[in-house]
Length: 362
Image (cartoon, rainbow, N blue to C red):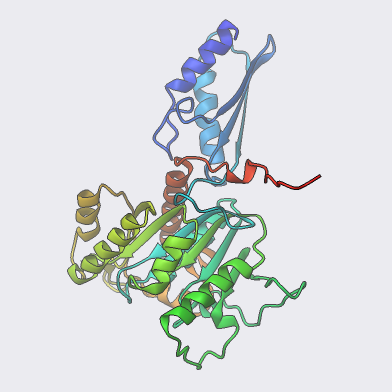
């Protein structure tokens, strides 16, 4: 390494990625440094979806390098590459899926499904290939929230083709039954249905599969946590004490089965009157922060109790796609980036790299 390349690397050690909080060298984002008499070229590779951040990172590094003596022309190339990360011990990756993100809540009515949908859409907006699985076989909501009307098909007679909406690959039991038909199934039937939807769907090269879990800590949640390679879980709650009690139970369930929880989303954090702008914390204050402090978990974001969020989800046009440049969409995108960054910091999964060993007589 030339002295100029050494100076460039030293400079990169002082620059902090605004999304990871680490410098670009410690964060292993520097792929190549080339220094010639014509100038310096630096290749940066981010391990998380960052379509909205590439320009920010590029400008940050270029401005710093231009201040170095003898640098000449500066060229910074920023790209992203999402890889598979380790899940629970002993579980192999799902075919066509690099990382599984489970979105859970201890109880119903906290806006978990709306959060899951917008999280998936925000990851896609940042440049990731994303799928969604509606794991609530008793109350599937993705067909309505994503405005999908139709039934899945099978090309080979064995696997199921996912439906698509807003760039997401989507699967739900709601595509296969009438909206008014109740799923009167016992636990084993529901978990078998979930397993079939998960493994027989032909997911196509997904960076992330976001799984919208039903509320609670019952059979379906345990099946997913024990048999599916979950890279990380996100817990959705409101600041209300009664919701936090159940959210803590959800965290403890994931802890027992070895699924890492990457953070908490506080929904309905504050209500702002659309007429006068008065701020009111209807469900209390600081609940998610207290839970995060108790379990050493980050609060990924806090969402307002906003009429438009409900209206957009009910109409099949969730916030991130209906108002992509709005304040609420920005919160969802920040939550998505923080989730992806937390996953990118986990150990890489190499199981798919190992060859299969076959013993046979010759």
